[in-house]
Length: 196
Image (tube, rainbow, N blue to C red; front, side):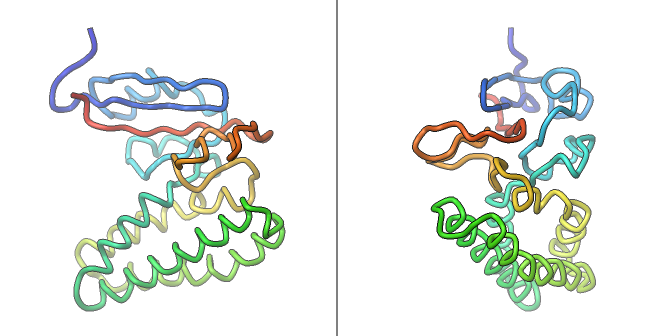
């Protein structure tokens, strides 16, 4: 019988070859390592969940869709949080535009990386400003992103890695639009939602 209760989570783990749905009693690191992510064999695309910090940052891609939602919430606040939130949101919007241009063949991987480089520098400077602002709710999130910064940009350097866990036309496990499989690294997308 599957675990039930307030702490039970339904996890989805997908690769190019298989998708696994599993209900776990909790989302603790030890449970994840034992039950669904026993070895670091590939690039993990996920949110910034604390329980996933065991996965090496150079083998991770943080989901930018999760980040965009966070930045939008910052941009809807008042004062300096709004300013920093808007800057992070706008940078993310530009990043997605570049990514779509890459996917649609309007940019080569080299052109894409060249466009992202100054955007990355600006984004990281904005994160530092967010940390230094010492604003409740913002500064801690910016510090956590700073800790994850290596895992923000994996999709820029590694072909076959997507910047989000799921999209309507792209399987987060590495299939591209049109249904053809893209060759590249083993990509693992992991998401969790409350179990019913």
